[in-house]
Length: 483
Image (cartoon, rainbow, N blue to C red):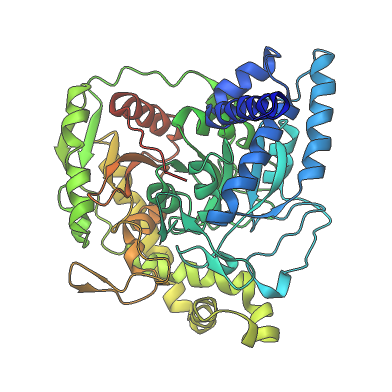
């Protein structure tokens, strides 16, 4: 080996070591180093771009990459930092956006061949807030077609793989985001959630995903329906709260937006949890759960007791949640996609067609019954949370399943009636309109991550983050994917 070759290899190893360090740092630590000018936005971006180059071909999480645009944004961030001006709480942090979010000047496909070349002329409010807070957009993350289902695959980009086992699904519909985070290709990511799309992939990929209260992160244009929300994903609760601080806050164009400023979520999450009243889902809402999920979940009970919580077996009455969710989900699909289906029925996947068709068949009586039932369910949930501070249950009913399988058809001998019935542990919670987070709590014997779902009182997003942070600090769980 010549001296020149040795020097080259030494320099390459040094660069790779620095790249690895930057990509494995928390978002909060990256933020601290950027503000102290210990590292530049360009260095952080380049490290993540090099990791994406190596890792993304294995997992297919980031489906549109705008490296040059990101480099220009990082250079502007560094120019401002040199003048002592930082762009916001996310200054210099790389991020990719779920491919259901329209991004100005960046291809947005919705996972559909109908939009494979679509480039929006404006961004959604979520994207505007993220970029205004100083984050560096690097591209888009994969999602199932129109976000239908919790298995991330589509005819435009194919399937996204689980970084803990490349033969398993990453979940969905924010599956690309979850995989990108777990694989250390991004420090933060955004997602959305109707039936569990922030929580389910977070559980499958061993990261955190938070479904905020409806209106916490406004959607424009908006409706009165609280079923679908946008929210943050990250590798820790503190990083997730950092992103939430930038995207939460009122907007006069959204009729259900909440009045509190997002800056509230930038405070310390530390809380004395002694005496906090935990309702433990001992009966698992009467739903079937895979035995490995049950085992890992119930093993966490003693930890909450050790940190001072009062844990009792108790569950809210969600007996009509299934019917309510399916009615309003079908209405939402009809509202968003009926026109596309009428013109392009042969180019849209069956599960989307099923939802739109059901929405078209709904009668006024069925809708009225679902709305009345939702009101009564909310009242019961309110009474439940007068006695308990938080409700805990597993995030998913099964571990991550084979990537070739579109959806789960049976759990512990119980047949599933539809392509989403295996997601009831998440979408029952959706119907309550309560904030809910998935945090990693362990692994199956096969090494697959398991998520714990913490549900809080209506609009107590801050309390959910605090108790999740306390659990995370006590659990100290980390087993990295081998990629």
